[in-house]
Image 1 (cartoon, one colour):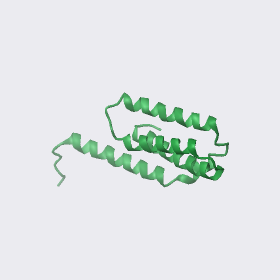
Image 2 (spheres, helix red, strand yellow):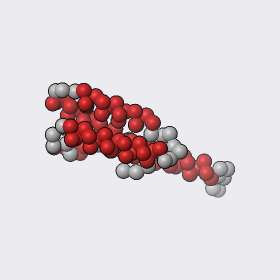
Image 3 (tube, helix red, strand yellow):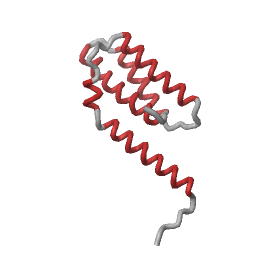
Length: 113
């Protein structure tokens, strides 16, 4: 005998949340390709590019009624600030990797990659 669905909207909402969580976990567990993609220098142009990506997603979030990505937005902006303050090359590369992952999670939470 099948189960009775009392509120189909709630069922769909739960499925969407589960899908988003799976996508976020997958993004967090795949840092190696992100680190390999950073073959260029992490300079002012890199910082400006990442700031533009964050601004783009922030604009997309402003047009939605969802507040799901606030934590991811704060994390990405914090990583960008730390990157701008860091001087040592190895530390900048580490922070850049964290920034890439934060932006990926932010894009997923905002509903698009």
